[in-house]
Image (cartoon, rainbow, N blue to C red; front, side, top):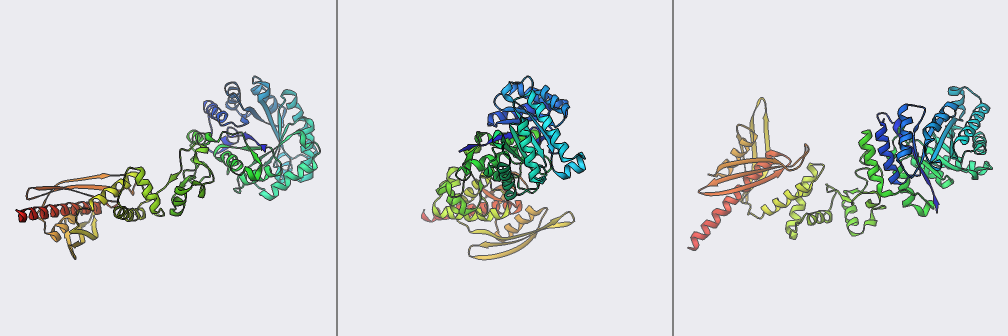
Length: 514
């Protein structure tokens, strides 16, 4: 089982995401979390790029124990000496200079305007300078995946001979694909005689969405270090995602025969810290750390998970720092998940009541995106309310209302075994609805109280209505809930009328017995 080093560049390449700039204190905070996470190397900054980066490297080196601390430097004397100044007070075994120079013809011709020979000479000289200052030197041939392989192999061999203990093969522009990258790494292992003297690293960008796949292909080909960032943040489309590479290796150790030393239980905390500091949110369907990564709505999946988690989960949520699997109740959920959640909330309904509540739940799930526990409690209460004999029930309700239109309610109700319809106007849609109900039921009750409250947040929240009716000295309280507040108001009124009717029936029965 090989151990793959994790080189975290969240504080350097990750910070190059638009809007992701961090101040020194924030960088130190992230570095402490990266140490708790257990990464092997923290690329703390680019010393010559700014005073902030220089100070960050110095403070992280002084305040954070554990990982090796690296500073990036171009293959220039001033860069390398500035990196050394930032690192010089750190323990010798914990400092690394990471220097780089382009090797692709397109970069050499159009950006640097130098020959391959000159690029090779500069690279070797600057690796030698860095090696004279620190024992741990890393070199990156920038745009390696668009570099001709014989020349790339020549550069890799030369910088290893000059003192580089790690050679990083970057897919700088996210151009390569897994099968091709595998062959590039294999080619280097087969054509660089001294390659065993260095660790081969990879640094993949995500322009084609292949950064993790390419990094895994490189590991399969023999790479021993992966450069990555928390949440995959970074230049353009980002970098290889640290959490994805770590959990892919851990979950499929059988395939890769490799793992990392990362404490995966710290992954969620790390992800949330980066989101908080940078303001860059994680998409809900993001692997490992997305809000939906361990959430299940499908009834088939939920049923399987409740019977045996391995049926639909290849990782335990606890392994990345989450409390538990989240069964999301929605229109695709089945009876098993619905019953289980009700039991967790403390409700135990008989089979008939459970089926009634489930049917109400399915209708509600078609109306709103998110089903909250409060929604379920309303469904249970409606099920309990349905025990009242239903003499009256709402079949259809149509409302017309507006700033230039008089409110009108067209209502169809079931009264006993018959259906009846009536249209009424009113001061508002609720008033019009209540007048239509009163006309159809011929009630002599008086509305004493009307209350409305929202059960959950959001535009599609359930609204709950309570009404108090009085008739002949009898007072009852009715309740109704719906995503449409007018429908909820109608349900509450009808529920109260059914209670009044039940009380009348009980009173008549008592008088006949006397």
